Length: 485
Image (cartoon, rainbow, N blue to C red; front, side, top):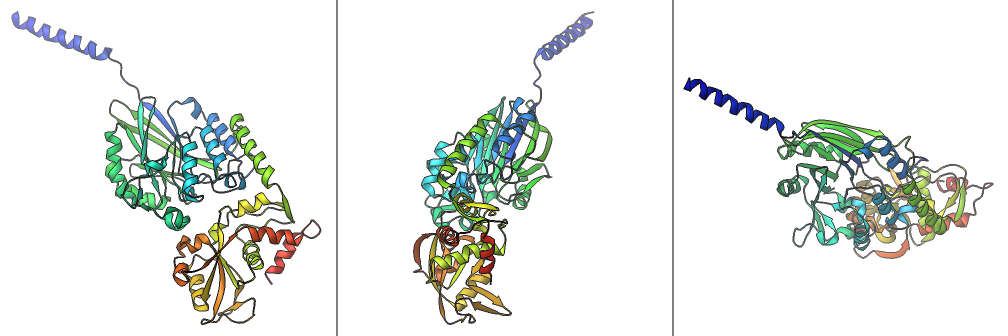
């Protein structure tokens, strides 16, 4: 009997214990949505009507992301260099738009440096969200430049989930922005930066650690395998303007395209009890069909008014669009340089500096800013014919003026004679190239004492267009076609 009583007592304790356990609240899984853009390049008004920042914000609301309190809005960098509405004001309006769109963080991209360090620091101070780069380091001490307002990571509490976001900047930055603007910085390897900071972010309390980066998807794919032991469930990219979503092992890799014309998303299901992600859904969407957010539309409108007030000045007329990647565009730029600086024989510019089409109709100053958004100046070098050939052949397929190929020979337009390898010529380039951008390091080696003309690289283009007096009856296209002769 005593034994039976003991058994009953034990059973009673088990039942009571079970009741106590069952009375404890069981935490339900949580949903986390990540909305990701990159390479916005100042296109707050949209490349096409109805596809700007206001429409994208409206689309996000329509997709019910706005109803989910656990939403992260991230950018992979290159926020502001592009059309005149952003470039003319050094990106100020784009930061205001991104603040209104409630971005949680952006990566430092290579084009964040385009207007110089002082302007960059000003923009960072205006942003209501942090700018991230764990691999950007001072050469003098190896530290992340936090004094500028750049952080290696941030941790955001979303409905009780602490999400750590680490940023990475492309290691190509010294070659794809003006090198003089980043002369005091190194951009260390991605794996090294992640192995240093992922443990720190987890030690700081992050439940989930994700990556936002200005790094192309092929590099991220390799990186995902290299750091798979770090358990990074999401890697966002940038720089290559790709619209992309895929899974590599346990890591989802996304990139949102460019110009706010599209975005990528990831939806994570997180179990607080096990601290594990139990499900991942991901994909990409176009910026189409969203009702414009009124607040953001008003901000864009105000910046458009400011742009028009300063740059809505007609300088010519086109009856047909000049595409960004066309011989006509290259002729317009390089040959107007030679017209504006007649002491030069040849003009060479990098095609990557030409950023937009020149639309049909009235040509405004704003159009030229959009085509040539960077604040470059013209540099005059003295090079031998042999050196010029090396620049042309070793550079990234540059646009050329004052020289053309006939059979196997290079012909100098000014003289009609073949390029003489031993003769010297005056060659115009932009200061981005002379500083070594786009791998043109050989320029300063060939002529370390080149002359900075202080002529803005847009100025001869604007002057030449004005000089032609083009109208609907005599459109500029006809004159540009003559340049190719």
